[in-house]
Length: 159
Image (tube, one colour):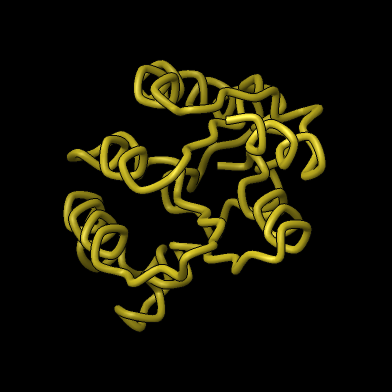
């Protein structure tokens, strides 16, 4: 959350003339609820199952950039599936940087409800400690602070 997946993904897709797909938006459209509402009504376990289903059952165009939720790679075999079907990029950022970016938009993010300042930083540190082993399996691990769409296009072209 807050790493810039959607912003960078949109810019990269435009540069490469690819379609951009935000998987959270695909899920929201299918279930006719926001992510926050889905969490509230059905809980995180149900959300993770639905998220995995949407990832694997959505028909993707040949050339697409797909932005996923931050937890998606960490459940089921999602990371393996993504790597088998494309290239996975981890936009690595420090917890404080992520907290600063997320401070203003927490109402849309169920896992961040009620967290501010140091408690938000601590929560992000905990989540990264849990998730980083999955994130580190990505094909490309990039500094999210300095990465641009131009640089990422160049990196992808070399692989």
